[in-house]
Image: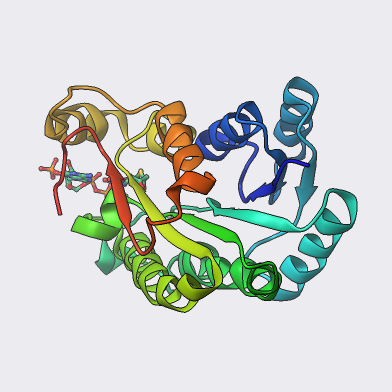
Length: 241
Ligand code: CAA
């Protein structure tokens, strides 16, 4: 039987492309979503991928949601922590709420999702944890002190957990997408996007969600077992670590 993959935020944007790419590669895929029922239903109808609603910033909701997916589909062998939000503001205008919402979803959400699947992965001696960080976790970004902090935190989490999982056949890796053509990026003011961001991308264009989906399929494969604790950048040459 093919392996089971769970993608958080898996019905829209980069997450949707990851879900579709994993399904195309033969995995049994479940896609989590937080709130946009209409988009999630349309995604499920279009792709045949089952969708499950819960908020990754709530630990108990993650425990319950994962139990539901495992009962319906099977033990989660591949976890893709993709769910993420932005609350961009210059720091002098940033509210505690904007800070807390982004940290709760983009960083604590990764703990909340990985912790409940970790014991099962250890018991089965196989697992893949793939977290979608960001170029802005690597280089920092004005207007994103909250998001950059959370995404940099995801990289520290990945490197620490990779060391714990290695002896148990579990790889833990991060992908840092650059600016990808999704609703999140297209929400950036048009003038900022066209005059400030795109000119900084040497390939001269935004990335496509499918370009991240393919990286996930590679890291999820049995053949990628020697790659752990890594950060793979996919940013059109905008930033090199
Ligand atoms: N790169 C370079 N310059 C930027 C910038 C960016 N990403 N964002 C803002 N600036 C510049 C503006 O051009 C402006 O410069 P001038 O005064 O010289 O025109 C200055 O910073 C102030 O910006 P605003 O006038 O827009 O100030 P504001 O207070 O109205 O809004 C903001 C500030 C909310 C941060 C808004 O500019 C914004 O949303 N910027 C985009 C921030 C960004 O890059 N977010 C990434 C979202 S995509 C994502 O997060 C996915 C991922 O992982 C890559």
